[in-house]
Image (cartoon, rainbow, N blue to C red; front, side):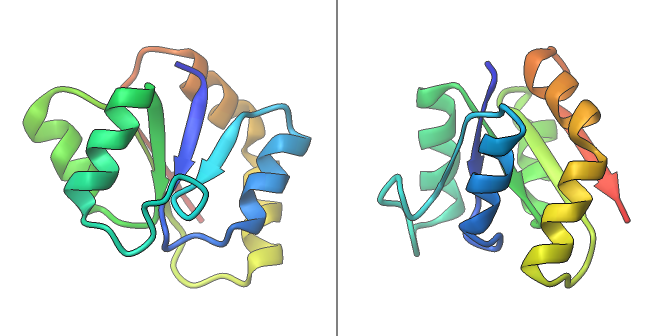
Length: 110
């Protein structure tokens, strides 16, 4: 698994940032999942073998309770899109390693 599914609490512009960094990603809006339940997003990510990238800690709980799926939790509070992109750029090595690895959860804090 090396791709990422960005939750709707993240800006679509992050898809471009990740792409620039060589990381395949799509936003829930591109997957037809905008406004859908966490369960629907979770099921899509599992089916497509994508890690969910989110600011929502509920997905971390879901990964821990089910023992399946992968979550990159951005515990950064409210950031402008540009600042969030810069945050991802500063942590690109950790993000890339996580997506290529086997760990189920990565939490990045500001």
